[in-house]
Image (cartoon, rainbow, N blue to C red; front, side, top):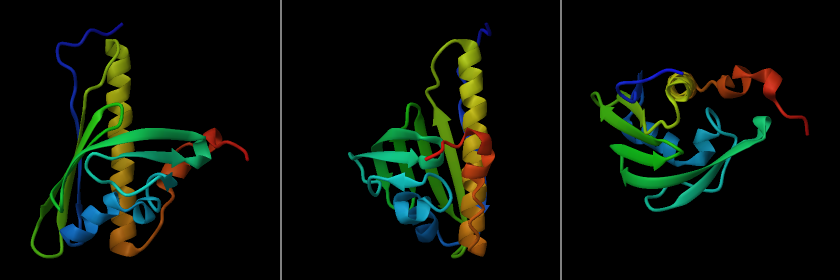
Length: 153
């Protein structure tokens, strides 16, 4: 069992060469988000709302409580952990996206695994977003991450 002196906070970041309103909307609107992250959502992200995200290929879903939204600036959700997106415009056609995850729980080993999985997962999400918005390519990164874990229908 690993003992931690401090609970980790994970940050993943990426420059997306698109205006901030387009990048922000990609996380708010499930019609866009489903092209690079989850496969289905019960609705758009709105402050105070709960939505369900599904990863149908894995038979998995998650309830997401939307805690805060500042248009084109910030999104905060409770997803079992607290996840915060910040969107910093860089000129008219670039946006620097930061995703910070905190609130990991369990013993030290569990916390380290959750932090590593979060780092990997949100890095994949940002790479998929970049390919979609900059090049109009759907990379299927989330689905292809663990093809042997797909459920059969």
